Amino acid sequence: MAQQILLFVDLGGVYVFAIEGALAAVSHRLDIFGVLVLSFATALGGGLFRDLLIGAIPPASISDFRFGVTAFAGGLTVFFLFAFVHAIPAPLLLVLDAAGLSLCAVAGAQKAQLYGINPFLSALLGGVTGVGGGTIRDVLLAQSPKVLHADVYAVAAIFGAAITIVAQKRGLRAGPAGLLGAVGCFSLRLVAAAHHWNLPKLA
Image 1: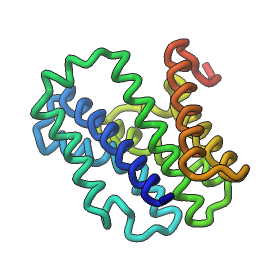
Image 2: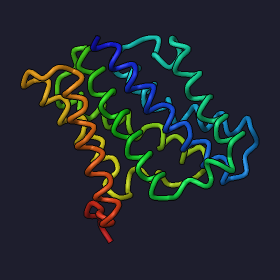
Image 3: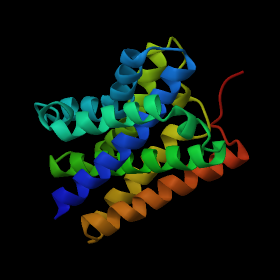
C-alpha cells in the first residue's frame, strides 16, 4: 500500500511539473521536440538525480514506463491544448506549482527513507526531488535557476519533506505522513509567494 501511495504521489508531481516545463518551452518558442524534452527534464530530472544518489538503479523514470508517459502526456497537453492551458489564471498556476512541488518533495523523502537513507539526508533528497527538474529546465534555457533564489521555493520543499519524515518517525503511516508534509510544503510555498518572502542574501 505504501508503494502504491508513493507511486500515485510521484506521478501526480511528474504531470504538474511536465506542464510547467512545456509552458516554459512554449514561451521560448521551442518546437514540439523541445517542448517534450523540457517536459521530461522538468518532470523527471529531480527524481532521476535522487534515484542515482540513493542507489535505486536503474532510476524509476527510466525503468518504469509510466513516468515517461506521464511526463510526455503533460508536454503534449500543453502543445495541443495550449489555448486552454494558457488561459489558466496565474494564481491557479501558482497553486498547481505548489502542489507539484509538494508531491515531489514528499515522494522524494519517502523513497529515500525506503532505501535506508538517514532522516536528515532524506529531507534534503526530498528537496532535490522537488527542485531538481526546475533547475535543469532553467539551465537548458540558459537562465539562472529560479528555484534557488525565489520565494523560499527550495526551502518549502525541504520543509515539507522534513515534516513527512518526522511524522513517520512518530508512528504515522506513509499516507497520512505524506499528506501532512505536502500540506506544510504547499502552505509555506503559497504564503512565501503571496508575501514575496526570500531568504537573506548578500547585496
